[in-house]
Image 1: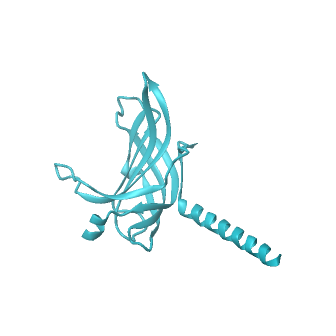
Image 2: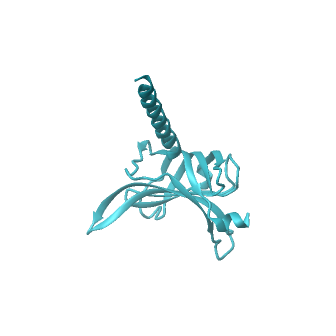
Image 3: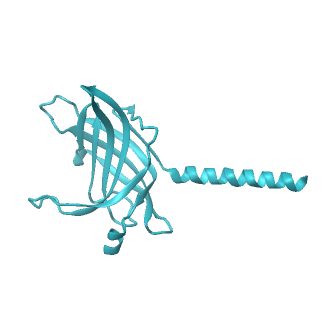
Length: 183
């Protein structure tokens, strides 16, 4: 009888600890837009990908390798069966193992039927964690951000600038093998 109770307790504690470990590995994201909570989709995965970005033809923006992460909000009908998906997208210059303010980053957002881009001079993003997983094919990042964004159609569209504030924690980023082979 004691052995059976011990086995049941042991199995229960192991399953609870694996559940807690899975929750820890899940990652989190929270943000406000002008003080209102940005609602995430129920099925949101907290993931990112390292990718190469082409430079501009005029050479003002060089080719670079970035961490790209997109966080999806609600979808709704605009009119005539056209869906609008609210999203926040982050592109952060990829520098292995580096925390602090990245050399280059950009934030874009689709929100309330508008498209927005970050104003570098009025924005701040700080990487607070960069931790490799044992497989060296993935790492986890955390960051705090406080950014001002402007509509792509400003000033003609009459949309005011918006401020987003928040944090991402323990976001799992995949590094494709062709990028790790170059580094």
